[in-house]
Structures are given as structure tokens and as C-alpha cells.
Image (cartoon, rainbow, N blue to C red; front, side):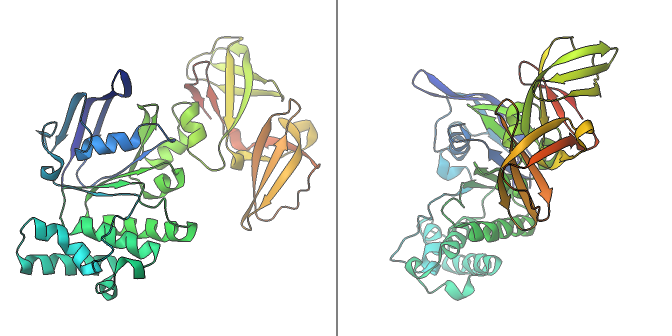
Amino acid sequence: MADLQLKKVVKRFGAAEVIHGIDLEIADGEFVVFVGPSGCGKSTLLRMIAGLEEISDGEILIDGEVMNNVSAAKRGLSMVFQSYALYPHMSVRKNLAFGLETMKVPKAQINELVSNAAEILQINELLDRKPGQLSGGQRQRVAIGRAIVREPRIFLFDEPLSNLDAELRMQMRVEINRLHRRLGATMIFVTHDQVEAMTLADRMVVLRKGVVEQVGSPLDLYNHPANMFVAGFIGSPRMNFLKGRVGEVDGRQATLELDVGRKVQTTFAEPPRPGQPITLGVRPEDLIAAAPDEALLSGEAQITEQLGGETYVYISLSDGSMITVEIKGQAGVKAGERLDLAIADGKFHVFGEDEAVIHHG
């Protein structure tokens, strides 16, 4: 196993800089997920770690050794891609062994490594089949097994579950989590799916346009987002955002005046500026039913999604903007119905003009 350091890592394609001086440390045995929207640079960053993309500036170190000029084959890493990339004419056993055979590993050692990988992934009964006889989930297990037999210092996963259906994705998340616990290996996993990130990661690295927006545990990022981008990206359904401004300020006490609601009282760590534009962020599960005279927001239900264990209601406010409310259980809210809402226990975040957080409720 190994630790990894990125120091001021930059990637340019011609004159265009796509990765902007990233600093990051990943501990030995840690499971870190790079997450962000398409085009944010997460796969490019992973490929630079793997040695498949040249670094324009900065350093990548594995166990303290600079890797910039070390070839991909000599970095001691294994990568699992979105496509399974299995040899269709070879059996599963041969697919697992082939890379080791080209490296001139002794046959007895190859057999042992293949058997161990098959046992870990529970694919023993598949070893004599060919990829065309396997399901998508089984093929992905074989692709992961091919990485395991190399006994890498770090596992790299580049959106490996994207080609699977929803049920298989869930099963494979469990398998990968179990694999990490069993091997204790350092793993870096790239995904645009924040649910995958939340359920797999020890720590998440949220990227946007080649910049790290925030690093932390899944619940740290969920409960204490650094800015509106992280707040909106982490969580499903996404956080609701309500525009407003700072009203009266008395020391650290301030009144927030919302454009489409009533006033909110809160206490800041640092006194805000009266008249300062703000955005109040509140998660769907933190909006609750209230009496009309106590409601912060009122609106008309447009769409109701019944998911069995919870109900999502999409509500139109007076300015035409939409918010989402999560109700536990099976709520019989109909389109056109008026809802009056308050915020549970002051659970909201306040963001300034630059979209950085200035208050956590």
C-alpha cells in the first residue's frame, strides 16, 4: 500500500489550463473519491496520477518518491476503467492471468494470485467462462480482479459503475466497499454521481473547472459546505436556494429578509453588513409544514413524487421559482395545493455575494 501527494499539479492542453495547481494528500489505506460534474477535470487528474497523462507543472509523489518521469507501468498502480476492456476470446482465468504472464511472473505464483482474487470477488465458478457469458456486474468483478492480481500500491477507479443499471450499481458499491475493508488498500475513485461518492468515500474531493472546491468526509461536506457549488452538488434532491439581503444588525444578531418569504433571525460569528445580498440555503428535508401565520415560505404544489418511504413535493413560490420539500412517508399532497413551510430547528446556511458560506445554521 502507499500514500500519495499532489503538489501544485497543473495540466495544460496547449494554451488552455484545465487543472489549476492542485494540492492534495491521500493517506495509506484511505478511500478517496474525486467527484464533480462532467468536464471538471477529475478523470484528467486520475490519469496524471496513473501516468497516462503528462504533468505540465507540479509534482506527484508516491511514498515520497517523485513520479513525474516514471512510466505508468513502473508506478505500481492498477486502474479499473468504465469499459471492462476484457479479452473476449480468453476465459476469465486467462484474463486475470494474462498481465502477469507478460510480466514473466512464475506460473505457480500466477495461479495463487488468480485464486486469491477469485476468492475475494466470489467469481470462482466463473473462471472457465468467457466474458460474453457474463453479466455486466460479473464482467466488472473480473476487471477489478485483474487489478487485484497485480497487488498494486494504489487502486484507481475511473467511473467503473457507469455502464451498470441501478440495481447492479448498488450491488457493486457494496462489493467495492467490502473489497476496500478486506484489502486495506489505498483507493482513488472517480465519479460524477454524488450518491456513489457519499456511500464509498472516507474523504471526498469536490472539483469544479479544474479547481478543488472542498475536501472532507461525506457528512462534513453535506453538513458544512464551503460554498454554494458544494452545497448544491452534494445532496439529492439538491439544496434549495433563496435570495435575500441582510436587514437590521445588532451586534452578531441579524435579520435576513428573503425576496419570497418572511424574515429570518440568526446569529453570525462575524457581524454581516446591513443591506448585503445573501442566499439562504436549506435542504429539502429541513422544510416542514407550519401554520400560515408562522410560515417562512408559502407556495403551490406543482408535482408530487411518491417514492414509498418518502415523498418529494416541488413547490412554486410567488416569484415563479421552485423549491423541493422532502416529506417522510407517503404524503397525499395534490397539484395546486397550498403549502406553508418553516425551517426545522434553524437548519439553514447563508452564502455571501461571492457564494462562499458565511453562516451555518
